Length: 135
Image (cartoon, rainbow, N blue to C red; front, side, top):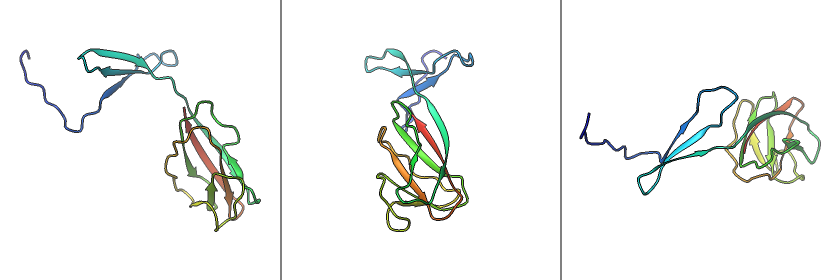
């Protein structure tokens, strides 16, 4: 296969992700080609945490999640309950007039705003939101 021309994908991704294959013992590694043509390996040191939160109907809302993951970069919400919920970025809000609605079995967009706290309120009993945080 010597002297074969390389095929370049116009939608190329600038890095590869690799793992040693040893469960629970090795960090995930990122393999990157540098501008100088060298190959470099760096560790990815993040955590993904999923938390289920019961969302009440009380004014002021429920913090999503109650405790923020350290060094969080982004999060996404999934309405895993039986009631529509509304969420927003302050403790003050009323159902139907403030916040973004999230119907049952719906996903929110990803939010990339660090450790800011979001709040949610359900229109009726039965609100549950699953929060996925990534650091």
